[in-house]
Length: 208
Image 1 (spheres, rainbow, N blue to C red):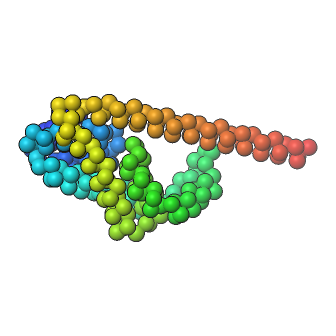
Image 2 (tube, helix red, strand yellow):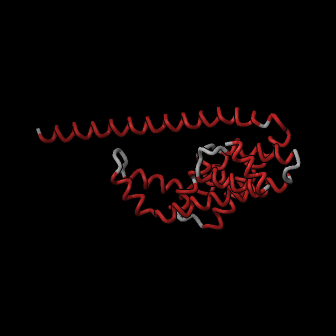
């Protein structure tokens, strides 16, 4: 992964870093915790300008986010509801609650979501489904991404050859976030199974 990003930067310079970040948005397993500090390290060695690195990585973040936004927009609410109706343990009311929450907190979610590993990519899809105004989405994404990217590019710039320490620390944070997500999913499934069991008992009691 690192070798590929290095080759991309050597070939294209700062725009190569932007391409790598755009792909990171589309394919979250490609970690920005590697790409951004590496961009900063490359800038510290004169491989690209520091300002160029900051600008192009932010452009890459916005382009990747917009691609996922349009995936959500093309999918649309009706298709999401249709998919939810066919999924076990998922109710249409769950989608409606999520929709109501996003309509109320969507702007903050898009902005602050850029600081959360994994979710900084995925949050673009519900924004598209709910058809958040494109200009608003773009500005919020650019603002949040610029802050996130600057922190990590500058870390790589000042850490120099120790830039990989950023990935080590952020890898722990990503695992914590993933663990919390899995825990939330487990709780959701458990609660829904209990509800289904109670509903079945209620139907049996009525038949008697």
